[in-house]
Amino acid sequence: LIPMGVCPSATMFLLRDNFTGALARSEVLTCTPWGAPIIWDGTFDPDVAKQEARQQNLTMGLTVFAVGRYLEKYLERFLETAEQHFTAGQSVVYYVFTERPGSVPCVALGPGRRLRVERVARERRWQDVSMARMRTLHAAPGGRLGREAHFVFCMDVDQHFSGTFGPEALAELVAQLHSWHYHWPSWLLPFERDAHSAAAMAWGEGDFCYHAAVFWGSVAALRGLTAHCVGGLAWDRARGLEARWHDESHLNKFFLLPAKVLSPEFCWSPDFGPRAEIRRPRLLWAPKEYRLLRD
Ligand code: UDP
Ligand code: MN
Image (tube, rainbow, N blue to C red; front, top):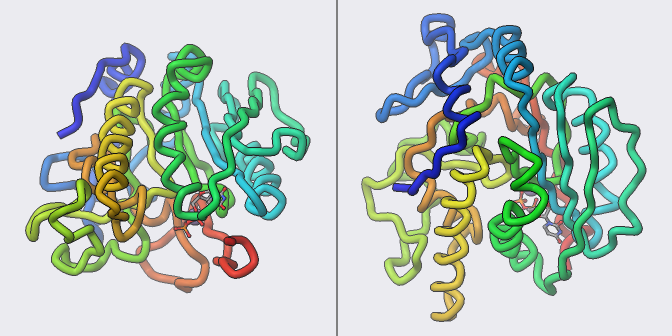
């Protein structure tokens, strides 16, 4: 269980939820065993959500890492499509973390939207770049991000927005169903099973596999979650261990009861082809080009 601090605006928002019901999508699972809504297209009213977020004058922080060749390859399209689709018309602060601030592309931003660039060290291995994000994300709210944003979205850069993405997805802590695994039985999910790892999950533990490419919540809730992941990663490193899916394994270990879960429609890969239950994808993965991008 994750200790959650209370962010006044997050709590206020939750009191007036916009989940319009499971009936609209009877063919898919719309509620977790612990009672959190699973947000599918058609189960929420986007206009109500938008209006409520605007009334509360919320600022969204969107953090993204672009280290090494990921910067030139993905960052511009990620930011440009975020300007089109990510909480349009609302106050947003993008936080780009990179080792080369001077190479961050200039993207035209709408009113009330800002971009901040923060320098991070370049780790040698891609696994370390990915895992180091947890440390940075844990420290960042201690600075400007924590003062500026009510909610913080953490996203991979190797994807782009393809549909409205925003207030309907707000809650104290939100997880994204991994689109590889959403229809798999839980015993098959690729959790860390080495009992020596801090990310180890017992058989029977864990209802869903969450994708580290997208998670978010209130500043306080994320501080709690990232603290656990940072601790777990350090525990493993001290023992010469590395969990199967790196930071994602730790995220799955410590992300036990998110307040909202997003359907795979929110972070989908075009490579999977059309599927009846996937109506309107919101984020699309870029094709994986690991040989070109990773050292
Ligand atoms: N990343 C990066 N440079 C790297 C490796 C990773 O900037 O050399 C960041 C980037 O934001 C990327 C995320 O870490 O989207 C996770 O890595 P990746 O997308 O390669 O992992 P996958 O989604 O394939 O598991
Ligand atoms: Mn990725």
